[in-house]
Amino acid sequence: MNKIGVVVIGRNEGERLKTCICSLAISDVHLVYVDSGSEDGSVDFVQSQGFDVLSLDMLVPFSAARARNEGYRYLISHYKAIEFIQFVDGDCEVDADWLLTAFRHLESHPKVVATCGRRKERFPEQTIYNQLCDVEWDTPIGIANATGGDFMCRVEGLIQVNGFSPEVIAGEEPELCFRWRQRGWLIERLDANMTLHDAAMTSVKQWWKRCERTGHAYAQGFSMHGNSEERYYRKEVTRIVGWCLLPLCSIILSLAFTPWALLLLSLPFIKIIQIFLNERKSFSNLLAFFYAASLIFGKFAEGRGICLFYIKKVRGHHFQIIEYKK
Image (cartoon, rainbow, N blue to C red; front, side, top):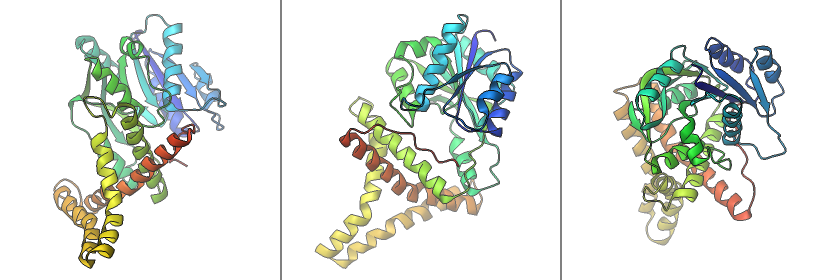
């Protein structure tokens, strides 16, 4: 386990961070916590547990990508034996068996640069928004295009592509994985429990803001790599823009040609019913309905995130993190 380094990032995670650190304290690994201006005693707690701490200069534009970069670079400069880095968000508890499982898999599969497992919500029953997150985390096992925020990877791979892109404020992991895949590396999701996540999402406002962040991630990724052979995120951006323009097109067509064009406004609701009927085979009726509604109405929040990205890009503004947690 001396070959493994762990980077934990966080900002005002409170008890969630304590749970995260305690889940890693049982492992014989090198750990650094990268803090982004917390005011809740996070730094003091981690130091009291005997782990290294980096406090970011908040005068420099912050991003999770920047925090992860500084964390892994600190570890490999201080602990030369490290060959693998586990990245963990501070609101996650790491499964007791995960580090060894991921380490063994990477050691025995030299073409795999990064691996992740099953992230689950800690309290899915508390809110419908937490349940939606739990559904989102349940992705297929096997070779994948990307990881989420928690994953283990090779130091060699990080150095090869110079780590995360610090200007990417959302979706930094898929963007990193895109560059890895361009170099012939594989990313693999294992059938193993990895982390328990605490979304702590209790309101529609938080859900909307999280969807905005997703739209921003699609737009920024498309702006960076949309002209690649893979056409990175082009399909996602096109689909979101199409849904967002539907109401406007319906109204314009009804005024210019026929009132029957207003029937186009029913398409989102028809699509929700279609998704609901399909997903009720796997979920309860309530969850299936909210899942279907979130997929469609979330497109409008994602569309707003796309618009905000391009407005800021045209104006030359710095991109700032989009937070949804209280």
